[in-house]
Structures are given as C-alpha cells and as structure tokens.
Amino acid sequence: MASYGFIIIAGAVAGLFAGHLMFRSDYCMVGMFRDLFLFRQASMLRFLILQLGLTLLLLELVRLGGGLSYGPPPLMKTANLSSVVGGCVFGFGMVLTGSCVVGCLYKTGAGNVLGLCAFIAMIVGATLYAEMAPWWKQVTQSWTLTQQVTVPATLGIPSWWLSVPLGALWLGCVAFWRRAEKLVIPARAEGYIQPWKTAVWLAVLTVVLCIFTGMPIGITTMYVKMGAWVEHLILPEHVAATAYFAGKGLNYVPPLTTQMVSGGAGPQMDAIAALQLSVILGILTGAFFSAKRIGEFHWIYRVPKIQYGFSIIGGLLVGLGARMAPGCNVWHLMGGVPFLAWNSFLFALGLLPGVWLGSRVLLSRLS
Image 1 (cartoon, rainbow, N blue to C red):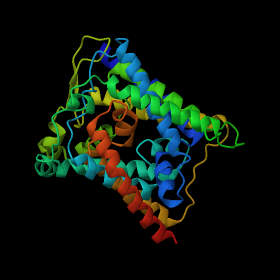
Image 2 (tube, one colour):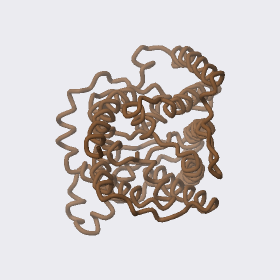
Image 3 (tube, rainbow, N blue to C red):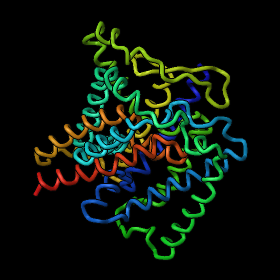
C-alpha cells in the first residue's frame, strides 16, 4: 500500500501544478497543431518543441546521473503502425472537439461546459474501444515494425548518441527564438502565465514523475476505467466477460519502492487508478482554484448548438483513437517522444493528417 500512496501523492501534486499552469497560459495542444493548418501559424507549436527538447535533455542527464534505473516506461509498447492510425483518428477528433485529453480537464475545472461534454464523450469513446479491442488486436498484430521500443535500442546505441545532437539542435532553435523575441506573447490578462514558462515547468514535472513513479503523465486508460465502472453498474455480467477489462497490462516495481504493483482497464482500484486518476483529479482541482483565484470561474454554456455536436463527436473519436494508438497526445508527445519511443513518433506522424482533415471539415461546416 505504501507504493500506491507514494504514486497517488506524486500524481496529484503534478496534476495540481499542470492544471494551474495550463489554464493560466491556455496551453492547448489542439491550438498548436490546428493553427498550423488553419492560419499557417506555428507560434504556439514552438512552445511544445521547447518543452519536449528540455524534457529530452533532462531525462538524459538524470539517466546518466543514475536517477533512472529503467529503460522506457513499462506501458510503452513495441513499434506498431496502429499508432499511426490511432494518431490520425485522435488528431481528427481533437480538432472537432477543440480539446485534447488534458485540455478538456482544465477547461472543465474552469467551468467550460463544452470541455465537460468533451470529457464525457472521450470516456465513452475510450470505453467503446473495449468492444472492438479483440478485432483491432487481430488486425494489427502483423503491423509490428520492430520488437524494440525505442530508436536507440533498435540501432543498438546508447540513448545519448541521439539525445546530444538533438539537444544541440534544440538549443540552437531556442537561442534563435530568444534573439528574435518569439518566446514571449504580448498579453495583459490578469494572472496570465507565458507559455514558455508552462513548457519549462511541464518538462520538469514530467521528469520528476518519471523519477518518482517510473511513468510520464498518462490519462486515457483511466478514461476506460471510468467507463467500465459505470458499465459495471448497468451490465456487470458483460463487463466480467469482456477480455479487455480483464487484462493486466501493467506490472512493475515503481522506483524508490520494492513492491510490485499492477493494473489494467477493468473497474477496479489498482496501479493505473493510482497513476492516472490522481493526475486527472489534480488537473481539475488545479484549474478550478486557479480560475477562482482570479475571478474567472464561470459556467460557460451559451454557445452555438453545432459546437456541442462537434464536441461530442470529436470527443468520441479522441477517446477511441487514444486506445487504438494506444496512448494520447500527452502520453506520446510529452512522454514518449523525449524517450525516443517509436510508437510516439508514429503517433505524431498520424496526428498531422488527422489534424489537417479535421481543420478542413471544421472550415467547411462553420463557413
């Protein structure tokens, strides 16, 4: 039980900080990618690059210093093209709904009803995946590209052989952006936090979580568990007979502990709940108190009906795509890319056409 308590505290603290920071800076990954296709603007995307590059370097420094006693986190899988397809579905859905799996949380915490609709729809979409999981696994079992999880492992080289040159390139970009004054956004809103500061703190939070829990931020398996809890109240026999709910995809010993913990997508309190529910509740709480502090907590619901439709349909696709990948933008981009994980790069590859297609649909329906 000590291991679970340790994980819960670390996740809750990380979630509180993340919710506060992302709300105050409107740190939205949807906008970062969507603006690239809608307005040909990459001003916000550079903050994501700032975050990922810093995370990469910090992880490598911690690894070289002996602070990480493991390779890639246990839930990172071998390279499979399912990540491309899942990323495409995810990207299409997140543009329609206007939120990613974490964006809907900090928006909900601040009183945005569209964010709440997206949150619920994502839970439903992720839970629906449990019904198609056996079929999807059968379809994608021959799509494996390599049995290795990371690029350095495939090449048979130490991770720093790639981290150092990538870090040098990143430092050059940051230096250029700083000289060109492209890291500061003019804003006079009360309590506004510059996105570059959020990027730096999210990188630090990711590395701290990896040190203390062995995992970067993850969310969407918990979305399945939430749906399974509700479904269990209505159809307990069906839940018990569903193979996806019975699986235990996580079995590991967290850093700084000696106790093995396990978890899966089923309706039980386990290591997945300890890791992810604590983060979810932390983000909701952090955004709520942050909004209350500056007087910006309001229930916002008077929007055109079509936006509710987009929010629900897009949320369903986001939840479904996150399980097809498997993993969401937070898990793959904020966590997997700095670990140089194959599936995370494949997810990003699929994300781009999905965002492009979603942007086209959004323009055609709203014009």
